[in-house]
Image (cartoon, rainbow, N blue to C red; front, side, top):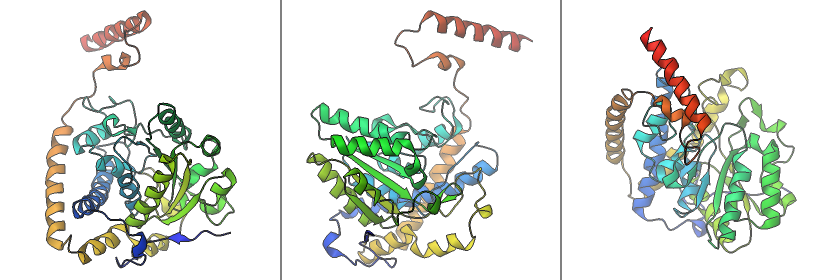
Length: 363
């Protein structure tokens, strides 16, 4: 049985389901659009930076920006986010600074992760945005564990985990969904179905018409949402969050969107997909749609956008110039952060490394 595709705003920014339209203050609507614009602007600039050899790796989210801000808006600051590597807008919405973001890409001495992760694998403790991992789907059971921990502790916090359509073929997805449904964990599973798992299309992931239908097999609700409609994502996530807080268990949301760029800076999508496919999705652009919605409400105009883009470019150029001059993390950081008190074998290893570095510098 096919599931209905939930939408609130059409491609022209017109409200087609006013009964579901969230009541969001104008200031919040503006901020949501600004975060979406910021993500796309940074994607363009930083992919070019990678091509210039100034950073080693980058992942874009062009066309998927609505999935970043819609779900996170429906959460409380105390709720947890387990992201994959394509939802940085959720961290930005919760206050992740541009400077920390850039330091992580360079892996320098001010990188919050001290250069231990590859670029675009952020961790933002202050925002309850948990460290990103490259292995596909590993964040799913981790989110379920955090959701269960909240419930056992007597808190009504929830955990939201993002993952792509490819992750639904992993054991982590099955384990996470099954355990959460059985235990009624307050967890929201958000499948960002962007059409491709690197070079693998949806047809090799599932024979079901939607990924959301898989929820029925686990005994939880499954909801199919237009992933380019910010308001529909707010509505669907808010419904799932309310259900989780009432103790009714998890929800699987499929956000149907599209990855218009390559999987990463190491990918060439021209070898596995029709080049006309991304152009077809331009008509469903989430930023254009949301901009039209805000313009019709008198909340946004061309002057606002010009001013925002100009200020963002100036800020990026300034911060980038500063960040590129920051040196790499000190060698001693290799031996920190695991133990409260450094054990003898790490002290020996650190001393050996320092002697070796001293010989190299002396030579």
